[in-house]
Image (cartoon, rainbow, N blue to C red):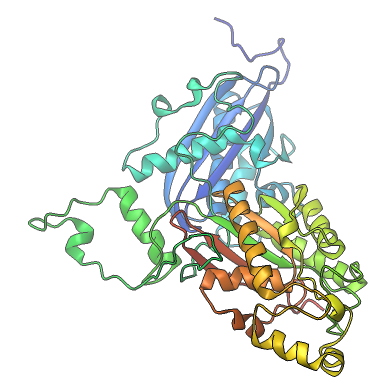
Length: 456
C-alpha cells in the first residue's frame, strides 16, 4: 500500500499543523487539540488532544503546538511544516518577532523549537473561525476531562461532520458542547447586574465553606466522590477567586471596554459627546492607541472588535484591530451621550452659562443637558439594549468594545448594580481598560485594569 501523502520519490513532504488550546477560567480546566493535514487535499492525517488539568490559555496553546509538531515528526522527521494557529502570542513568539518573557512559556517554546531543525517550520496567524478543527478537539478534551475521562480518537466527532474535509465544521457552525476559552474579566468581583428593563436577575456571591468530606466523598457522607474534572473545576475557582466566586456557568461573554485615546478636547476636559464636533485623535491619542494595541496583542484573548460610530472610537479601534488582524464592527449603542448645548464647553463654562440646568442634571439621571441633550437615564436604556444585543451575538467570546466615558461607566454601573449617581464617582482616563463578564444566569463580574491610563 502506498503512502497517501508521500510525493514523488525524493520530494520533501509537507504538512500543515493546526493547533489550539483553551482554559475555562484562565487559569482553569484546560485542554489542547492539534491536527496534521495534507496541504494538497486537506485530509486529516493525525489528530491529538489532551486534558491538561488547571493551566492558562497560553500554556494550553503551547502544549497544542508541541503535540501537533510531534505528530508531524512521527509521520516524517524530514518534513517541512506550516503551523496555523489563532494565538497571536504563540505565532509571534515562535516566529521570533516577540520576546518570550513569561517563565511558563520559555521552556515550552524552546521545546517546540527543537522538534524540527531550524528553518523547517513556519508560522501563520489565522482567525479563530478558521481554526475550528483544533478548537473542537481542545473542547472535546476539556469535556472529557470534566467527565473524568481521557480523550480518545474514537470519541472524537471529527468524522461526523459533513460538507467538507474530515474534522472540519461548516462556516459559522459551532460544535455541540463547545465552551470557548475565556478572557480577561472572568474572575473578579462577581456582584451581579441590574439592567434597565432587561429582566436580567442580579446575583449575590457569598463565601461558601466546603467540608473535606463533601470535597472527597468520604464514606458515610452520602456525597459522590469528585471526578478529576470536577476537582479541577473546584481548584480553578479557588485559583481564580480565592475563597469565593460565581457558579460555573460555562464561558461568559466578556467585554473588554476601551475608552478611546485623547482628542484635542480631552486634556481641556471639555464636554465631547455625540452631538458635537466629532473630533479625531490627537498625536497623543494615536500613540495611546498603538500602546493599547501592543498590550492587547500580548494578551492574545481578543476575538472581535466593536466600536462606537464616532471618529475617535473608530480610529482607536482601527489601530487595535489592525494589530490583532481583526475587522471593526460598529454599534450605534456604544456612542457617547449627546450633551446638547454643552458640547465643547468646560464644566466651569456650563456652570456660568446654564447653572440651573447643570444643577438639575447633577441631581437627577432623568434631566437632559441644555438644548435637548440626552439624559443619563436614556443613555442607560440605550447601553443596556446594546449590552443584551452584543452578549447574544458574542456568547462565550472575548470582545473589545471601543467606546466613551459615559457608556463605559454605564456598563460598569449596570454590572455592579450601582445607583445612577455612581457615574459621577468613577474616573476613566483616555485609553483605559475595564472588563465585564456576563454569565448565562444574567449575573456579571467586573474587572478593572486601567493599565493604559498613564501612557503619556
